Length: 218
Image (tube, rainbow, N blue to C red; front, side):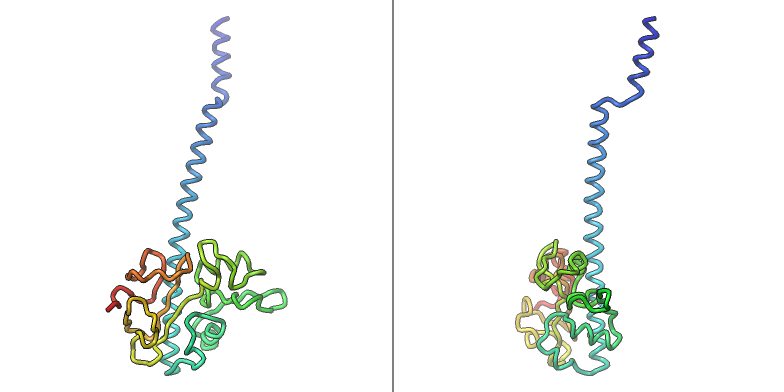
């Protein structure tokens, strides 16, 4: 009789989890979830940096093709230093970039910052725009840093057509660099700030440049 009761007690014990076992399992699940979340964040960050590098390259190519076909920059671009609706629409009109716009049910463009694909905004700015599409303004904050206006792609043109972008074209060029190019294009990265003063193609793994800034330093 005693053995039968012991077998019955052991059977009940094996049938379920103890509180400690459940806590261990929950802890393991939590650790696994945290690891996966961290991995996802790193993957997303790397993907957006790759998108920004590709976007900068394609926009720089569009500028170069425009200059080759038109032989001169538009007069209206002489004082421009960042992508805006006018530049985007000119590229779209020439078939150089596929500019995507967000529109409402009446086909009205929601706001000028909706020119987002190859237009004004880098990947971090585009993500912020999509989250706030109905209320977005230039001052709308971006989760990774800065405002929408600070996530527009930046550019500097070779204004005197000597084949270089230097202090004559850009008085404040970082480090006094002289770059053999018709145009310099860059994304300020997730923080929306220019961080390439230290040199290098991708200083600090943040900004994405169309040129190797370290090699361009005097």
